[in-house]
Length: 623
Image (cartoon, rainbow, N blue to C red):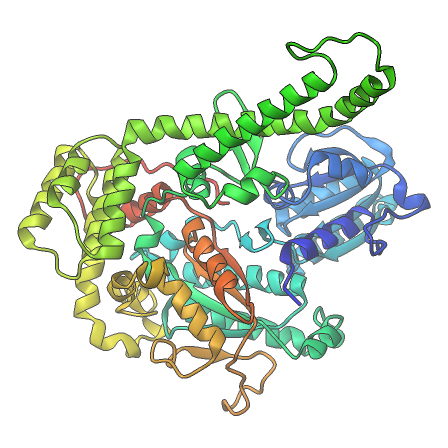
């Protein structure tokens, strides 16, 4: 049975909207009191997690008539119940207590997106107890929902934790800050598996953020499993019946650095990278679009190369025009066709068929116009920035291990944004173990000519130097020196930055990440993964006897420090080509475009005092 993260998150949300009453298996709505209209009050993180799975029309169907922000002034609706979905923060519980004391709503159904710390829960109880007597009576329910992650589609999720890569690799970071971030990532992953109702077997490389998150998640799961019943009790029978648990494969972004910066020629990565797709929503200057599994064209063509997408749009438009002409001819609206009234029944039947086909034709036209506008916007950027040239050059370096020096230098001096040029230069740096010094100097000179901030380039250059210098010490990194810069950069795998990239996109464009995941799922002896750590929260702490190393049919792959659509596509291809079939869910602390990730590298370079000149690094909301 395949893991269904999006569906299970949606089930929890729908049950919450119906005041935590169990819904019918077919998704039917409850009866009586459940159907009363209600208000939904959320903070911004919960708005973000809700928007990819429920649209406004869906909320209306579940009885929600108003959606309000918790941090904005709100008018009293004293005869309606209110459903709160917020993160468990002191400021949020203070607002909830104030709303209850003021009697804004008839009843308060408080849902926290994740586990509520005891001090926060006590703060809410104390505030309600200190308010007028009716205040506590209005709070009908307080529940932990464990849905604090953004599920963009069935096989893709994000914890919406921005700038995790910077925080984990900052040379000035305090140990407490890193520990806090690691705990937050572990809690987010706990929410994912609580929603799925399964306890994973955890695999990760030794040292660094991946091992730290694995240890924190293992401890959290072990502590939770001590309680009976627990969040995983309900799903225990199903798990036993399937004789299978998923494997959680944890990776640090440094495992494959260049995938985070490279350009891609497929429709979906292009829309995300160039046009700024966020939370399945796209804003163009004149239009706003939703791009999700309800868009059949997007589902079918989003992984196709951009030229094929343009051809498919033309084909769809031609087919639409042909169908419209056929309808016009049948109803007498086309050229050369006259309606003389002799076949009234036949013409009436054609007219009825035409009327019935109008909604479908209208939807097709809207879809064609939508993707025509998106493709036109993309084409403008491609021509303005020579993105096809960047993709070709990077592909030659990563797949073929070759580069045409003149092409490389012309791109660095020619069209494209400064981020484009920096991404190309970093890809060049990571594609060759020892690039010729004269060629490297020319690349740096070309960047300076284009007035590109060198911080990110020098930072990656430093990473490569440290990679060579500390390779022999990869197995000795410990958590005790976590604030040491070199250890934080390379604690996970000192050879990963260059060795992983060296094999990038080889073997039929298969990423090193995908190759490693496939090896971990197979569970066979393999030198690439034999030294990976194994955590099994259901097994005794002492010893490794009896620990299950595979094979696994299902996996959750999680990238600490930011993921991207290129890795997601590669894992989807793994699903499609393996027999028996495997199921993989991909997640990350945030989903980043290449430009967003290069800004994080630049910020780290500036913090380390590398590069020349300063640049204002624009912050971006985590997806």
